[in-house]
Image (cartoon, rainbow, N blue to C red; front, side, top):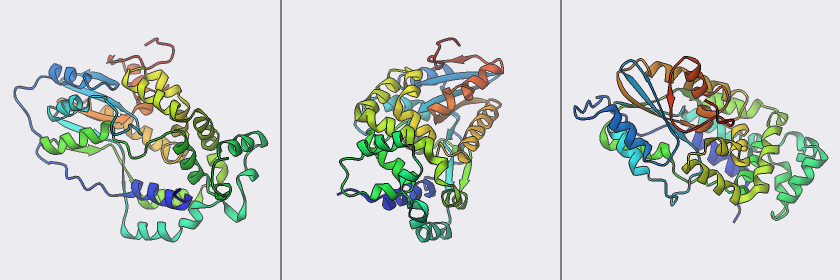
Length: 321
């Protein structure tokens, strides 16, 4: 049975607002036998894009993570887990924090969040050409509920048609698990408050999400084969190819990571956090969204502009680094 749009939005937002329950150890292990080179070499065996940056006595290993990696996809997470256990500290993606009142408010306002305003439909916002493409993609749907869904909810539906596996597990999950078992200290690069996320969903007009809908339609047209090509390019370290896939482009402009209010905050927090840990001794392993690292003007470009040597796979589409 198909999940209704409002329920999909509820699940997605509740997931974004969920408090991180994993306890981070406060005592950072300092294994005497561990060398920086050993950790770096071990991490690179994971089969995911990894870069190394050094400054003074500090080494940062940047792991380019993507979402939607199926649980049964073979990418050797055990190598990344081993590198995690031998690092001095971990940086995780931004964490959302919500109170009980935030969750109650979310439930109370869900109908507003999950529907287009004032009885409008997608045809009131999309160009005739784009609406026609949407009609084709959604032709197999039962009923026409999708026509009045909010563009956040519709975006979720289209990304699902594109083959995105939201139940998948990727680099971040592997690192969290290994860090807990090895008692390695970690922290998120920043925090987004639950009330800010909810306000964002309530107040943003549908027109803000038009780029998301256009990109998500293209991803849905590419279908699961496009999603598989994205993951294979990631495992094969072909970073520009990952960023060029329709699905990755859609994820970059859809809620939450592509929201015009949230996206700049995420990028700033990663740039600042990376610079900060380059002043810490030993090895820091950072699991960051691949696009935030490798996009033009992203973290890797910024590090290179500072005169630092960035060692790892090619991330620029022209191959010049």
